[in-house]
Image (cartoon, rainbow over all chains, first blue to last red; front, side, top):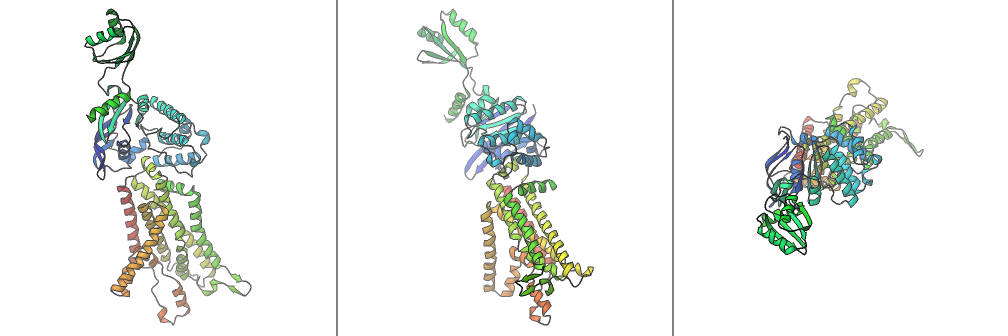
Length: 300
Length: 274
């Protein structure tokens, strides 16, 4: 697969603080990536470096085939960092025209992109009159102007109200559905879980994991079970080597799988043992559970 | 180059404050010179007409108008420092870079704008001087008109140099008001150093050194014209004689500073994390 961004051993030090430590990963075309990490884990710094606004200390990165200078590559990239930054005294349309001039894009795109984010009727209002949600949507329109090969979003829903968050997520999903590569930095796990196929997990500038979301932890998921004869159920589960940890909370039994197993096979297996279930749910750990497990493992 | 200039002009001309300041910095000197050339009747007591004094004769008019017009450069200096300050306070500098402008292009777009407005100002002054001169001057031979037009070149270089200094201060402190304060501090500093050198050696030597300081070097490009006017009135008074001409080495000094300021602005931006 075509790679869009390659980062090799990137390090950034602010004085004695190491914000990004020997970070390497590759962004391939067509996937939706999340950069996960608590506040201050180096997400924004990493994005700042590849976006030409923060100077790296060591290491290197290359855009596309590696022969494009960073500022030329950025003309094929759409990016929003933290807060939307525009000229307050210009209208939305004038601001976008300025971006068109920088990126070398035709003005015709402006109407199209304002339509996508639903700001077309407010295009002649000055930027300073916009609400935060509208500002953020304008930022997305601006990032989309050049039909970017990759869209980089740094905490795009930060500070928005639930409605605004929902609007932004819908827009992101729409864009992802069109096959645009997306790199989304966030500390909101459910946000990443909802839209991303791949993740890079950072903590204190160190990469903990990079790869597919569903392979983040080598786990086969778990069953949530209820049964009228709980003791017999637990006994059967414990005697089988298919299960690792078995947790009983109230009338709910949670059994973690050691190997892949389908729910119908499992149901049949129990039925053969004379156990009839009243409740059976097969689940995988949520990203949050996986993330906490991963960061906890690293601490020990 | 035109893309970068176009970019910056949009930023400036859509901003009401900078639009007014640009207007003032160009139109005000224009009007002051125009008004001074008119016959003014002071409450019926007497008529003031500067033209009668011969100050609008070629070639002295080039000297006079460029000297007075350059006093108005401060208005555009405010525009220059605020066009940097605003980029920092709106964080649009960061956004411009993310959108694909290189740091070099950013500085160049500012510098081209400076050159552009200096050029416009020079052309305006040249035109008005030419008109007033043709109207009042006692000598209208072509060879006399084109004499000492190097004052125009000096005026242009002086503006570019001064605004480049403002650009550098703007980049250095990121805030318009502080940048203007720095300009004032530099002015005082130049005089303090001048005073120190005078104290340690002699006045003549100190003045020679001072002519290399940025603000003084820019001022020296166009010397004050009053003494010259007096000189033309009293040609027999030899103590009035002074060197008012524009010298090539004076231009080279200012151009040197200009190059240094633009380069330092670039270096500063390049090394900064935004």
